[in-house]
Image 1 (cartoon, rainbow, N blue to C red):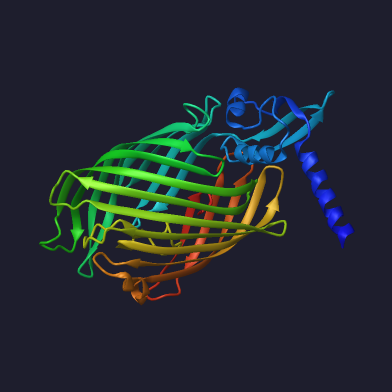
Image 2: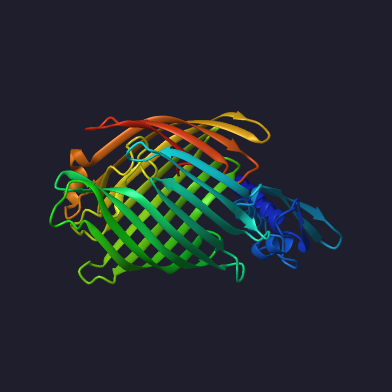
Length: 420
């Protein structure tokens, strides 16, 4: 027993010695074409003069693989004389200038589309610049720039502008009315990375909301026109412990989004809204990936037809329809098994089976609403993913969801990127 214990200690010592021996004489970047090597050296933690640390290098690999510009990264160690070493970081780059086009139908089955263009690696420095135009009965557009490493390796900035107009259903008195909804404004956020796993975003937004009645039910207590200037303070805290290997993910991630919204109209109450997404991913064999997301959300429980949490195809429940209900609280679980059917040099075909389920608190209601059958939706389904391995986020998805709860519907949902 003593011999076995000594053998274990010896093996651990040898492992530590292998991971920590040698002084780094140089860090070389290989494979960078569009990404600037000085930017890569700015964000990695390994530097010349350090003692070789394999744990630190592994974190650098994961940090690089999280960048939109890089699809994969690995390293090599070359020994020199006098216990010095050269560490080579190899990267495989993504193509990052991505046009996109979505075709879909709106709530009244009219043809609608969104087109846009995004560059995810502007100037080779992990800056995202993008814009879109959408036609869905009305025209909308938006512009955004995001530079997470603008000031140094940890501190950055994001600026967004949008002029978004849609036809929105509003629910009250067990009836529905359609409104023309316009939201125009800008947002500025400071971005800060505490360490490899933890980052924060903090900022504010100034915007104008405009509701105009189109058709449907009316109520003297529900305004047919509403135009109000609002301000918003936003806090996002992200814990990311995911490991990336091309289309596969492993690990846990938690993202908290908390907002305070105030209004220039004193008759409209200020309110708070917050939600947290908990995501867990697990590799199953060589080709399988189990993925789950739990969203818990609450807002100030104001009895209003304009409640902030919505039940929608593109946000939480695949197959349920476009904005079929609203609430001041939400519990949503999405879970799916993804299996790689084809994996070639640049192309991947994935199939998936999923179950989406959730419940909502009615505006002005109580927590018992989550258990009411009319507020619960459960939608199992199947889908496909067409993935380009060399283009960032080039994932075209199609899902079919079939409701099995009260007054359920069914439907096909298209999109770009994984659903979560």
